[in-house]
Amino acid sequence: MKSLRYFFLFGIILLMFSCKKFSGSQEIPAYLKIEPWTLTTNYEIEGASTHAITDAWLYVNGNYQGCYEMKNHDDGVYAMVPVLEKGEKKLQIYPGIKMNGIASTRVQYPFYRPYVCSKNLVEGVVETISPSTRYYSVDSTSIYFKKEAWEDFEDVNNIHLYRIDTTYAQLNQISHRTNPNAWLDPLDTINHYRSGHVHLGDSIRRMGLASAELHNLPTVGNYVLLEMDYKCSAEILIGLYIMSPQNGLMDKELYYLKATDTWKKTYLNFSPTITENNSATYFKFYLKGTVAEGQTADFYFDNIKLIYVD
Image 1 (tube, rainbow, N blue to C red):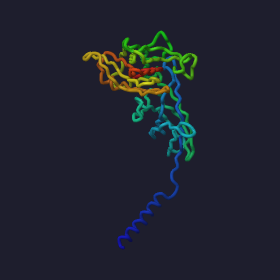
Image 2 (image 1 turned 90 degrees about the horizontal axis):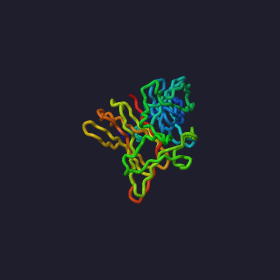
Image 3 (image 1 turned 90 degrees about the vertical axis):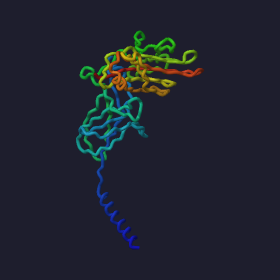
């Protein structure tokens, strides 16, 4: 009985402390509704404005708040972010992507500018933000678009990808005018409507495309990233050929892209492999695919960009 009284008394004390801790008004956050990103490019220098920005990395007055994913809601796609700051605040929002297409490797994309604005944050009030971004300027930073690896397939006489050898299927330029599978730039349907296409089946069941030799890439850990839009009915292997003075031509398999019946964009990081082979004479990236006997597959590519900082 005595122990029961102590237990009862302990319960009353615990309840008193709990009520005291949670009594009174709680701090109510302000809210930021961050809508999907828009990307603007100078096509002649930077290529098409396709992107796969999935996240918003938020800083309030320079203080990091978190990384927030754009999610599907009943009333649209956005990130709803609670913020305990109040009053006029400077917001910096950095575009975030899934590096190598992996959700666990979310990063701030190093070549896109942050969106900066000021907002008066009020308890319980939702502020809507429609962030936009651009690539960092080629003139003001050391960002480079490698022309030998830039391919939008609009110029039929100057395709930068080639078959590894004649045993692989032919790469063809296709037009959205005659093939709806080709990518069509929604901002310029008159000039940007062609893509690359490889068909596998019948007697040819291998795809193998490679870039030209890539020289003078940074080898000190700086980002070297491949952007690419693709649509494919079979898996794609992405890798690097490495010409080594010591070992000759080496083949480094890096990433696999799953089949997709809609156009997707990927950001692939070549930096670790290039850094590990900093004495290489040159690099080439390649795209490969296969199908089993009796099967067919189609591969579509567009807006291929190799971007790096030196």
